[in-house]
Length: 150
Image (cartoon, rainbow, N blue to C red; front, top):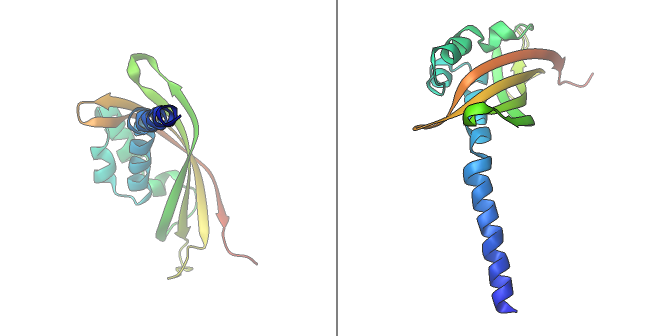
């Protein structure tokens, strides 16, 4: 009985390690990239790309340029994985949802952001010698809504 329990525990640990190291690695790298993009840290986001096309996409699709609402102060952001597909050549195509909290001009608050912008990103991740990098990036602005109750 002890041997079976130990075997099940080791198998579960192996599944967890495989999922963390292999399956979730491109998603974690994409979340880190989107966090930098949402902070408008273009140099950091561009450093997480592979190739000139992806770097140019990051530099031309900055947050305030993609969002159709005026932004003054940026808050936190959160991401969700909406879809994942394996692409040819070992690339992984991720569809990520992102909500970025912000304050519009004239409504800057020190405690919490008064608006939230929603985005949908299609990001192609590529495995390189330096880890997972962004090979393609296409952000889409969905909506900006107030987070304050009236």
